[in-house]
Image (tube, rainbow, N blue to C red):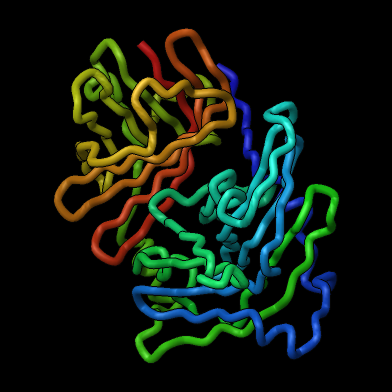
Length: 320
C-alpha cells in the first residue's frame, strides 16, 4: 500500500517569512498585541478593524490570525485559519463571527515539509464585545506546557487578510504570570524519556476481528510487521492498543469529533480520545485516500500520563 503525505496547511509554512523578513511595525502598534501566559490560561490578542466585512472563496489560504512559537527546539503555530480547497464553494461574505464559523482554530506542529495538527491540544478564538479584537485562548494546562514550558521570551503574531494579500507579522514579548509554566528543557527531555511508545509485533493478537485499523511508523517498510497502534472498531466503545513503556495497553474511546455517518473525504480530519486509568491518548487522523469500505490515513498520536507527554506519527488504514 502506498501512503501519500498530505498536509493541507503546508501552505502556512511556505508563506511564513523568515525572522529577518518579518514586517516591522511601529512600537505603539506592538502595544495593541498582547501575549499573556499563565498555568491554566494563556491569551493572545489581535486588534481588529471595527465592523469589517470579510469575503472568501475557494482556492487556498484566505484569512489567518495565528501565533508561532519555538519551544524546546520545536516549532508550533496556533490560532485561526481559513483554508478552502480549489472548487469548494462560491464566494461568501460576512462579519468576523461568520468568518470564524467558516474556518478553524487549531494547534499545529511545524516540521520540515509541512505541518500537522497536535492531537489533544486545543485553541479557542474569541471576538471581543466591541468586535475590535480577536483573542486566541489556550485553556488547557497540557496545551500551555506543550507550547511554553521553556518560557520563550517572544512569539510572532501573523495575519493574512485576503487570499492574495501578503501575510504580515510582528514579534511580541510574552508576559508570564507568577504561576507560569516553568518546566526546563532538561526536565521536558527527562519526562519524554520516561514515557515511551514502542511497537507491537504480534498485531494479529489485538486485531483478530472483521473490522479494525492498523498503523505503522512512516519510516517502516511496506513489509514491516511492527505497528504503532491498532484499533478494534467492531464494538462500541472502540479500543486502541498501544505499547506504552513496554506493555501493550488497551484504552477505551471516550470522545470523537467524527460525526455519525460522516463521509470521510481526502484531506478531512478528526480526533479521537482514548483513556485507561491515568493514561490518555489523543489520535488525530487525516484522510489521504478513500476506498469503498475504508481509507488510508496519516495519524498523530499524543499520549499523556500524569505530566508526561509523548507524540508519535503513524500511517495506516482502516477497513473491513
